[in-house]
Image 1 (cartoon, rainbow, N blue to C red):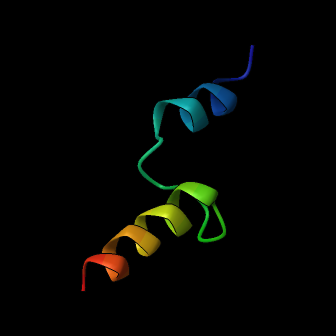
Image 2 (spheres, rainbow, N blue to C red):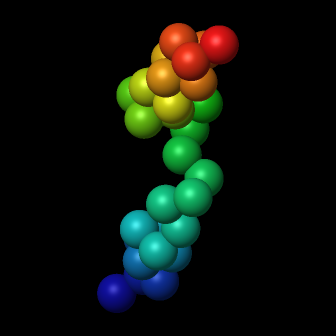
Length: 33
């Protein structure tokens, strides 16, 4: 068992910039402006 794969799932606070979640957050943020 590799602990590296566990660390990835344990740290969901650093999603890739191209992640749909990040794009959604940006969309909601700018739509409020």
